[in-house]
Image (cartoon, rainbow, N blue to C red; front, top):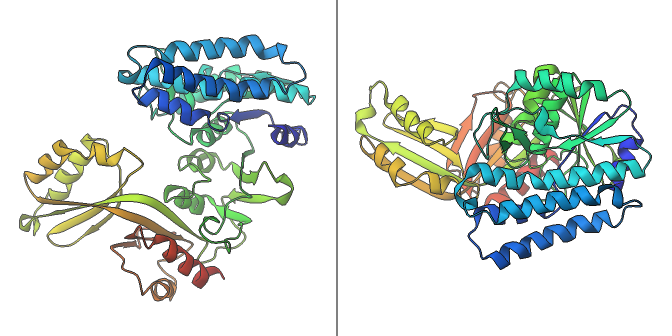
Length: 429
């Protein structure tokens, strides 16, 4: 927080600060919201959250300025956590989960004030209107802009507003959440609503890398990316970016900067509409835990409406399809499988509906590897260089040519680390 305060203090153009929860708090809140546990265990989790927050409070020069409000928020959290219907009501889960950001924004506004910045803690629920899809709420852009222009903009002349990421509010006044990683998305939405010039994302890495540096030490930070490249990287596994962040930035041509709050002097990555260079290969991403579904029927040959029937069923069960390949009598598609998500929702009912008119095969233990670049579909030798590098590995599914910015393929999860390393060596080293 002190590092972030220094970054904000050094840039007088910073007007709105969007914060995530303090490290470890969101995981504790998720445990409370989604796991059946005894009252003693719930209280133990709340005590851990309190310890994290009070450690920050007690490091302030004037903790009394925010101690009452902090205690009030923790009491509210405790009341929700002990609610008898917590595990069965999505609205209560979202209200509980919002406390991580509400606590950290309160404390960070105090840190800024301690550093001589005229800061104010602002409740984002006043402006970030969403629908009522708890857990994955959809922002209502027109309402957000109107509210932000009316309630936030007048405050920005002399005040830095510290507000919450991840959190919103529906038409009935219920607290909603945007899903994991929603703080970046919130920042981009507010930047769009307030007609900002830039949106800066300060995280724990020095910008966006050619691949995950945890996979290979040869990964290099990228000085720039286009909106399209960044969107592809975020969609296909680059954890440093939230997939939806690029949409508001692209709509309003808002430059996005990604840097490290731990090492702010080392620069970072600028994401812009037009890059100085557009190399064929820009980066490699990996998204783990993919599910591949293959539907097959001889009746598909020359048949109309087969794909529509398949994807209508998938949509009704709120599953999102990523990659698709087809042959004359079968279709394969991938589904992202975050923990306890797709495999639960791709349930017996879904399979039974599909099985009424086709054979269904579901396979998991795959990872999705994507090479992101430019003009890949029209540049000679691009695909051959990729395939030559990984000729020793089995590729289960390949998608290429739908847009000029990526080539994606499934590999067994036991091979994906080696595949990324070999590709990175061939394309970037």
